[in-house]
Length: 254
Image (cartoon, rainbow, N blue to C red):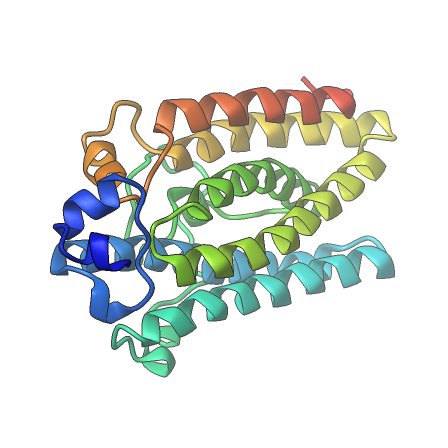
C-alpha cells in the first residue's frame, strides 16, 4: 500500500482493486473468506489426487500409467503449495493432511448436489467415485476444463501470494487436462469405447457443472468487494459449458 492508500479503509482499498501481501494486512472477515477459498482448493486437489490413484492400475498401457501417476503426484504437490500459504495463517500442515480421508467417496448414484459433504471443503464433484479408465479420462477432461476457468478466476484474487502461486499451478493443471484428452481420443477410436465414453459424459457433465456453485449466489457480492471474486458463477458456468461442448465435439462425443 502507498502512503496515500495507507489512510484508506481496507474495504475501500480492496473495492478499488487493491492487493494485500501478508497475513498482517488482512481483516478477520477477509482472513476467513481467503482461508475458505484456499481450503477448497487444497481439499479438492488432495481428494482429486487420492481418487485418481486407482486409475493408475486401470491404465491400459505404460504411457497411460505414467500419465495417471503424474496427475496423482502433481495434484498433491499443487495442494502443498497453497497449504504452505495457509501455514502463514497458523494452519498446522502435518495435521491438515491427516484430518480427512481424501479417498472417501459417496455412492455412485448419490444425488447431484453443489453442497459439500462431510468435514472437508472439497468441491462436490470429488465426492463422486471413478469406476474405470474411461471414466477417469472423461472426468479428467471435463473437470480439467472447469479447473482452468476456475483457476483463471482465482489467479486474480486480491491476496497476491495466492495469486502468484495459482499462476504457477495453472500450467500444470492444463497439462492434466491435455493428458485426459489424449487418453479419451484413444478410447473414442473404437465404437465400443465411444459408447462407454458417452455414458460417462452423461454422468460427469452435471456433476462438474455443479462445481460452479449456485447461479445468483449472494456470497458473490461480498467476495467481489474484497477482490476475492470477479466473475459471477453464471459467467464461469457459461464459459465452461461452451468449452466442454467444443472439447467433446472434437472427439465425436455429444
